[in-house]
Image 1 (tube, rainbow, N blue to C red):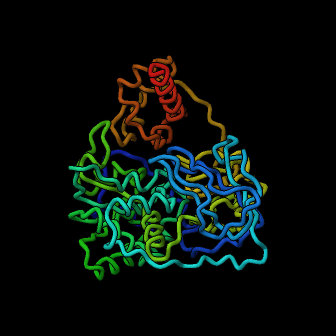
Image 2: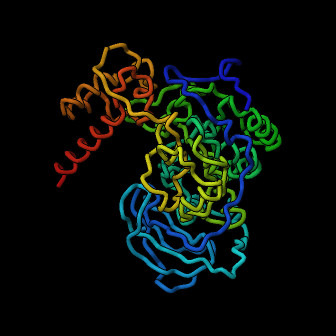
Image 3: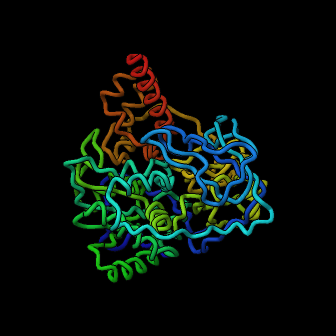
Length: 450
């Protein structure tokens, strides 16, 4: 990988941190297709919002791409079978979030070729906005950058609002992860096509494809494709810095404009979508394929063969790890996602869900127990915070249980990037205390409403 972090007039934001990238483990490895396994588990809740509602029964045969659970509300999305097979159970199964959650289990048909049969394309220009939104919801599309926020909700622009800028997020600033990188390189045509579909309904003045400068191959390919598209697309190389891929930081870097406290990108006329989500949008409207698979980066020093893998949703993580040679005995910790915002996983006997962008296995060399010392008021957390919060003060308030005071100090603006914890020389688990603070504030407000 070419490292051009410190050269070139690249756009960026103030503050942030510079963790080691570790992307060379998998950034040049083309996407491989995961072989089909015997059984799949599809949690009904794989997105922010209400869980999907099953529309199948036990012993029912299903086809690859068939709807098996419908949205149960506006902030909910459909769920589809990743294989031809038979529904064997609908009940509680282990979820990657550590809980037992409602899910549909499907046994794959061992005699099926497991090919998705393309459907007639849906020309976007022939349907109104309301049908477009309903189609995206039905397709089960969510943000594939990790948050898994329903895409149709984000694409639903309130009446009277105008989107001036459409931004495709290909920054992928988390260390180790390279799935978005490979999607941009290998699915460039679908990315441009999906952007065009979205632009048809959003009608933005300008479109940006934001890519960190450590992905020169993706930048070159997409510049060529964008120039040939005839759309007002600009590929914007951004400085390699964490958390450059956060929506608010990307908007600041490209437009020089801040999203106000408590507001959303929509409030400044911007819509941001992950590149993988836009590729999935193209695949649905051109082939009729709902979100039944995604690219997952399997990487880390404790993975025998790092790879970028196209994985059917519901595949057991253990099977994905074994496809990549397995996890070595040196593995000390397994994370879902990257090391900055990823979640520690206690078991590989859970399914891959829509929001999982990476399976990261770290060894003892990267993981160590940190003793937390007293704050020395060095100010490094202030210099790291991209939102200009005061993490040291928030941490002190958290230790004293002063939740209301934390909210008054703009705690809810924090998107838990972990830059403050990364920069703290005293090893204080700042971001973890912020999560507790947010949970306590939400619980208090819920009690007040009831």
